[in-house]
Amino acid sequence: MKLDQLQQKLIAAARANPPSDRVPFAFEKRIMARLPARLVPDEWGLWASALWRGAASCVAITLLFSAWTFMAPNIAAPTSDLSQDFENTLLAAVDQDQPADSAW
Image (cartoon, rainbow, N blue to C red; front, side, top):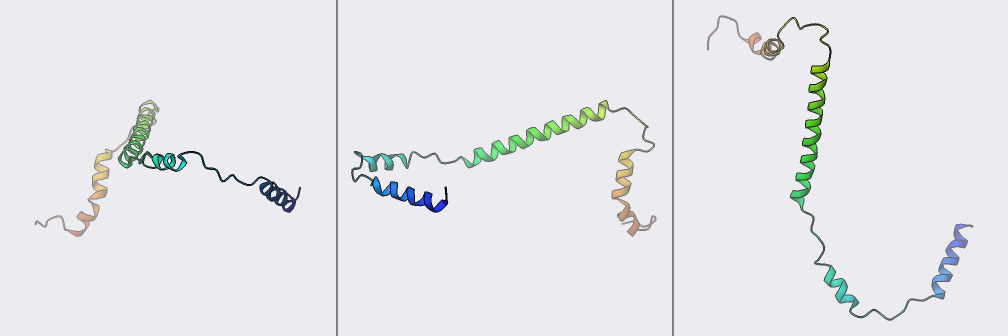
């Protein structure tokens, strides 16, 4: 069926059945009574639930990686201390600007 024919049939059906002028008793009062009863969303609750979901996923990822670290076979023992390498990398720029024998 073509769209134009369908539209004409629907308009003809709507014209054949006009809406009633009669309104149910106290209809407007029932509608107005429902308006203040609408729940206001709790914004703090939404934030809290989102943060708890984020915290739960972070804990799950941490546990997964911790288990992976402990369960993984130790292929080769590290030859240097990671903390010393990290500290040397961070302080490389500071050490570069000042000579070794200078004092503050």
